Image 1 (cartoon, helix red, strand yellow):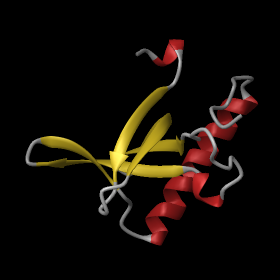
Image 2: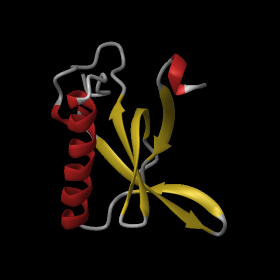
Image 3: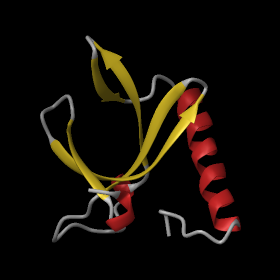
Length: 102
């Protein structure tokens, strides 16, 4: 589905076999790496104010010729990429465009 017509959703499985649905917000190229920002979707009956429902940042990696999503390697990488996403989102807001975090 085109982003022009609505959000993109993916389902990811963690190392414990739990599945989560995420809404793709934005993609960022930073320091030669592709990062993707997501918000977890809220299922009926879940608390929308739950702390676990914050921004999720994953990176795109190539493994055996296949593109996979992976967690970030360090707190420093998380902080740097999060800061870059915030700059991108606030820059778009300043230009009068709607932020995906709105």
